[in-house]
Length: 393
Image (cartoon, rainbow, N blue to C red; front, side, top):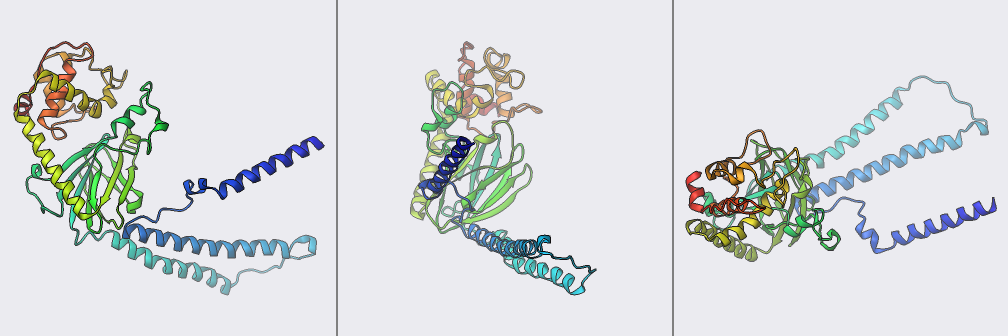
């Protein structure tokens, strides 16, 4: 018995020491108990309402549970207390109805003001459309705040944001990349959104296939991205930095691998980034007019395939048994080129095979099709040029 008691005392002492150490250590900083205060007016409003409600609930809880415990202790049977026999009390009923009503009215006023402010996208200087795809995001700077609204989509910044390649490799079994070695594992992308601080940004959210949800906690809102419907919200970022989020709607097997990364920078840096993006896009468009060599197409095609296709068809081209057909030795990959072009450009209705006509330029499509026809033992020997893709559109 003494041994058991001693062991229990030691266990309690060690547990108390561990808890005390944790509570007073840096580990507490990595264990947040409250919601983020954010870096936008919307986030600040949400935080303020949250804290107000927390204190209201705390005060109500103290009063209610205080009354309960006081009654239990003061009027317990062992002290000879005798229960009163009474029925109804108009005064008490009025009080316990009026008090919650007044509390709800008091908290609803700032909450309603916050909700109205969240929906006010007026006077926005920049408009961006975020479109969810399985499993990546597409961003279209409809009005970049510098060059104005461009009627021609090809003359404005547009890009896809995929899970960063290194992080994508690390999540694959047998890749040899240790996830623990990567900072912000599965929360990094190849093309982050860049926004200027101090400018009101209107963000439109929609989807091209299934329901997604665009969520960056520090910006203070989460918006569903629904096919055929556009939701809108806004952010005015007050502090430069990197802010991360993710799709918050279960949208398919790779739902956990479509993060969101926002780089908030000073206006001058934002303008320089815009100019660089437009130059890059112009160069990519020009690449569709040249003749590519087989080596160039294969190198580019492997990169495009691993970014856009490997999640379903797998890096080895063998697909997922019973779910996604493989491309290794398939009739599509070694069959007639027009059929291959057709399914890549327009997808296959009723399946997970998406249409890539609007997702990739002619050069990338030519490269990935050439790669699929000449790897994993596929020996079609075909070379597909951007001009072939352009003619098939």
